[in-house]
Amino acid sequence: MDRLIYTAMSGARQIVEQQATVANNLANVGSTGFRAQVDTFRAVPVAGPGLSTRTQVQDDTVAANFSDGPIQATGRSLDVAVQGAGWLAVQGANGQEAYTRDGGLTLSAEGVLQTHSGLPVQGEGGPITLPSNASFSIGKDGTVSALLAGTSPALVTTVGRLKLVNPPAQSMVRGDDGLFRQRNGAVAEADPSVVLVGGALEGSNVNVVEAMVRMISLGRQFDLNMNLLKNADSNATKANQLLSLNG
Image 1 (cartoon, rainbow, N blue to C red):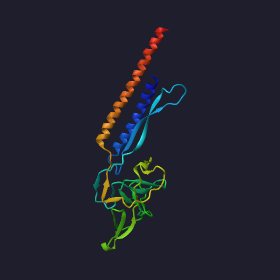
Image 2: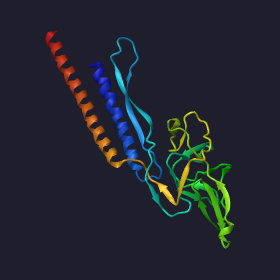
Image 3: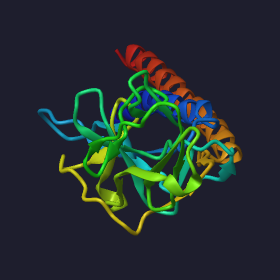
Image 4: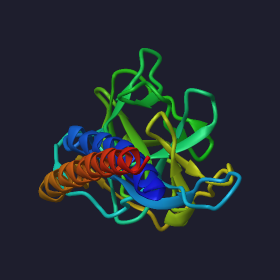
């Protein structure tokens, strides 16, 4: 009885947490380069005096789903999609390097290449500043080129090169800001094998059908745990009645 109550109670609570994760994944179906969050349950014994009869359920964020999302052409010169494995390096809000698959880039008022959320994009030599009154293109190796207005196409100049990295997927962890970093806090080295697709963006890798099925399954699991609690309460009530009769 004791084990049943703890397991069902903590299981119901953690199912609500997993529902929030699934809802977050569904909310980011349209987010560029989003990686679905993957959770799992595990049993954790409750430490204390006496017999270890109490076990609670814990919800753990195992990892992210690192499968590729669909690449969609936009025709915009500052849009890039990472083809296959790899990441774009950006400067996080805390000044430290972080990694993203969101290649929808813009220019700040000062001409600094940045993400839509205003984070500077890292080049191999630091943030990249682009000249005004120029058209730009980004090559598949991350090379950023500029052509000043009114000049010959033969006068295209290289402004910089995006820092592209490809650390092992198992070493990557998502932060509260949605950006990824290496689990050990180290800065990843640039990887020349990472390939970009210009004029395109990578969509979210969330599978809507799987997420909806998961949400329905979690709802049924929640109902099951609540029924177990009701049964435990009913059994305890009947046991008390029998004891009072025997007394």
